Image (cartoon, rainbow, N blue to C red; front, side):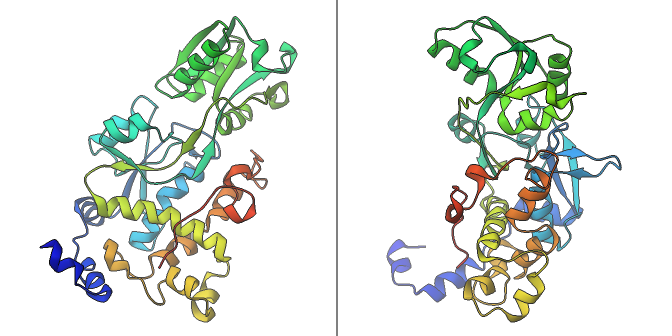
Length: 340
């Protein structure tokens, strides 16, 4: 279309044209098979792990469930592919999974050279250190010459190298393919410390026979924004996964929960709430979805605060405080563009 002609088009006409956009090949394929194939971790409590009945649970799992709810109105229309850190990007690139949601750090290299797009941050994290209490260490700066259990194929390896080089210290890395292997090696005394994202350290610590035997040191040596990932080249699918998370964050800010969403949909006069729940304004067809896509996410999965609290928050075994993951209006940095 000629750019000079676009300038003269009114907002209503542009919105109408946007509504004609094709849903995209990923969404078409997902609808055809009837479920979202989601890549998750091989087992990290609070983020993605199978319970005693084999049902996957966690904050990353709820991102997959949110996408399924937006598309099908059913959060259970998901199949999960447990992936190691080494396997995760290849599985997404090859089309083995439709989306990746497994505590994966958003970095420049990953975002620009792998043919992938990060859709947002569902957990702001940073790398830390887990050590045995009887080691008597109070700071990472006391660990010159120490050995570290590390999961291979992660940003952890480079961060540790940078930290020790900048502090003119030596260390010995001992790498493993899975997080389970790292915590078992740590418990067996094969390394002096385990280093990973702090959230992962808290999750792994509860797997110890005596969780109180180890402590997380105060240092945070990196920025680790974690979030869902999709393949480049399908903007419609990118939008769906991105706005799923934004809908959850907006819902928390607006006070819309899984418990009150029906009442809010029927009775709220707040235009922000009405747009979120598909009552007025924005159209789901712009993403190839029904107008109630936002309602379905909150109804079947919850708002961001609910997802955080039950999986990793004070109501969970991990008991992690919101910290940076609190809303921007509550002292954190979680923030989503408006639905309008």
